[in-house]
Every structure is written in structure tokens, then in C-alpha cells.
Length: 94
Picture 1 (cartoon, rainbow, N blue to C red):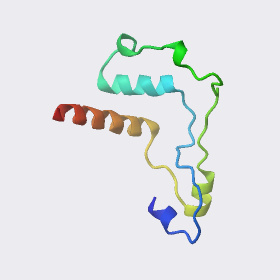
Picture 2 (tube, rainbow, N blue to C red; picture 1 turned 180 degrees about the vertical axis):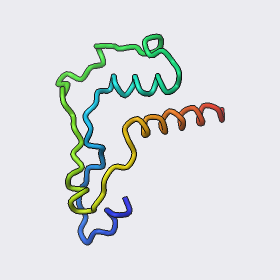
Picture 3 (spheres, rainbow, N blue to C red; picture 1 turned 135 degrees about the vertical axis):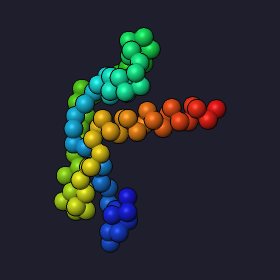
């Protein structure tokens, strides 16, 4: 964010790992990290699918690297672990 704010002109940048994954794989990583069996908790309701579901989504950080010199240093797994840790900490406060 700081690098973006230092630019002379405003612009849009994609901050991403460049790695393609599915929501299911992200859930598998999160549940495994939390020590839970995903199939016991995950409910898939096809009625909630988007009508024009996109099969392939990919964040391309090439512009951020080219213009800002930015590269992801946190892996997908590390980011998901941080998110799970934050959720657990938030729930522990209640």
C-alpha cells in the first residue's frame, strides 16, 4: 500500500500471489490448519452459486512487480494460517 501511495499518479494494482487455487482448496488448508475435518462442517448449497460462475480466477501481480517492484512474500498457506489465527483470537475474546 505504501508503495502505491508514493506514485506520482493514482493507479490500480493487483496484489496477489499469482497462484491459482480454488475456494475448496483454501477451505482444505484452513480446516487442516485448525485441526478440523472439513467435511463435518462445510455445507455446499448449490442454490447459492452465482448464475454466471467463473471457472478460472487469477490475480496477476505483474504490474505491481513492474511498476512498484512488489512481489508477494507470504505464501497462500501462510496467509490462510494468519486468517485462521485471527479468527481464533477474535473468538477467544468473546
